[in-house]
Length: 107
Length: 121
Image (cartoon, rainbow over all chains, first blue to last red; front, side, top):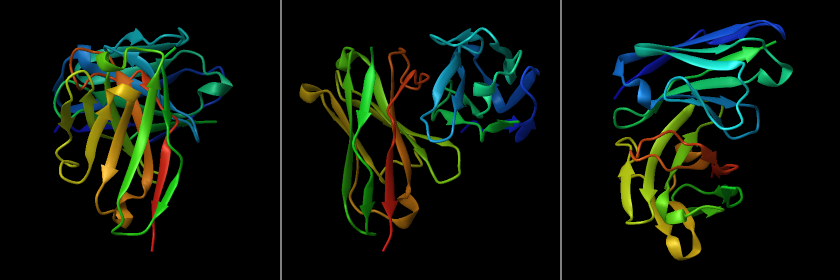
């Protein structure tokens, strides 16, 4: 199965700053089948990005995704207080679909 | 609006059986893949498997095949996750989630609220 490794494990930033989260795959993944999720404490995950760069319904445009092959990035251009959460990448290209271990974005 | 509503928290003993549910509404139940994601305490997300209620096509993560059973009753738009003999290591939050991508592994864009399963003697 494809292993996704996210870095850093924790990102300590302030509101208004830019956040850059990375996800590296153990083998090449089609961009069409790469996604990012946000999970806040006590809540279910929420789909943010699909197809590596397309925002899901209702997702603010400060969230953007990029990348291809084995390296993918989620960028939050200016952090809002509600953006402090854990972010997971997922590949849906190869069976079974797998998630990264998560990056916590904290104040 | 797509809604997935899961059954309530469960506390069980090792060796007991359990079936948790996820009721879908606001969409054509038979046209979406619906599946389950495990989150152990303080840990990340694990894709367990999915079912397509339209034809009952079911796909499992090999790590979970034989450990759980995924099913659906389209007459009541409800999906299920069941265990025949629980272990302490099954203690986790279980989320149901759905998508209508053509590929069964597609990203989940709709999620239930989660069902906490605690297995303890």
